[in-house]
Length: 120
Image (cartoon, rainbow, N blue to C red):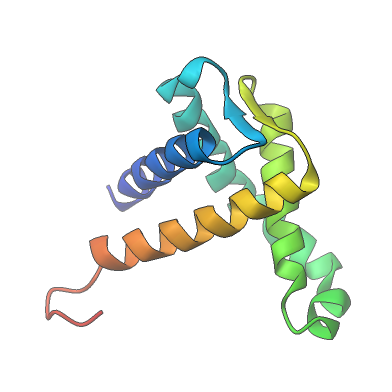
């Protein structure tokens, strides 16, 4: 249930960010495409991202973790390659999209999944 709620939150964020940001587009503003993008990004984050982090560990350490932004942008570009109807114009648009998507997802997930005692 928690996974489906995270996919739903990511879907809404992807749909809104694709509408707002230039260079990122969901063809015909199709919400089903946004669901597929959210699901593909979740799969890529689970399986491909750890491998990329492992291979680029020296660069990540040297840049004090800032190279993780590049990895996130690459994950967005890979997702755009696999999902028909989701277009990202360039690496810089993917980087901006990934930063905003990470920020909004973490902000909303923190509010939605806070524990019952009121701790955040």
